[in-house]
Length: 442
Image 1 (cartoon, helix red, strand yellow):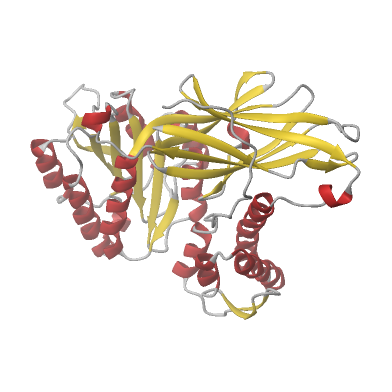
Image 2 (image 1 turned 90 degrees about the horizontal axis):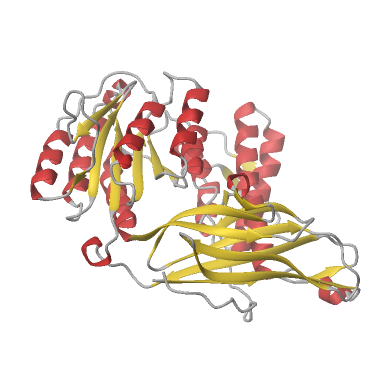
């Protein structure tokens, strides 16, 4: 498996300018090999809400049982796995833990899959919801396979009512950097912000499952992604010169995720930003902004060096440059990739601000913000977001963002717009990016 990194930017800055922007595209190639062939261990923990609300209506727990059973039956031999039933306490549904024992992942085989599917089909829905206990139990399970690629899937239908926000935040701090976690909310009684907090901290994705009969497909999609992961713990290492400040580092495709506050200092000038596990054929974009001291006209300076780290090995590198000029034709041009993803970030913010204003009864602000979102989504070709917006507003002119708020909006449609607001469309890059430094295979 090999990685490459390329930087896209307009390196020309007007006299006195200090902010340098670039989009760094990271691509992995090499396909997916089964664990038995690649030597890669994959560990999966499936966490299913089994609180009392899953019985209201009972179709939710019934669908969860069946989807979980089918997902377990699809686990390839050699995958390490566990199942957690989550309520106000976390229960190790499978494998069982003997009295006084420590939870351990089990290897998928005909026997363990059969045992786990039998357990899954008899999950009982009762009790409350305390998600920190679910995550902490997953942490214990994952500790039994320290070298595996560790991925969790969390399914819930309700709100985290039986513990404080601080308790959940503390659990997320313990789990961060150990495993990744996707989260799914079923129906309309859960909070998008709560699940987004979990997935943001644990480098996962949040989404909505509108109807219980969609669970099976979503479980399957998660496992397909999980089995495709080949390399764990890939990091962006960013060097900036003395006196420079990293303003932000954001993943901007396929989804927007701000990584700025997650930097781990390697030295006073170098920080590592986590990107999680990667599949054999994958591409992601990152928007980097560095503030540097202004240079003289004609001066060229290295503003940042972005290295892709797999373990302790730098496998590729991209350079971010700054050249000061008094030629307005050169400095006024905005790189298409930077412009596109700046707009996608504004789009996500406009949706959230518009939905917040709508919830608080501020129709004027909601109309302005959601109208701007329509305008940005239309201009960037983000058709999926346009369709979601059309369920919340009546669009009169997408080019100008002229909209009217719909009076009767289903909660499920509003939540779908919220959860998927950070999904972006890729941009067509410039034909000649700065060439990456030579990299090695991983």
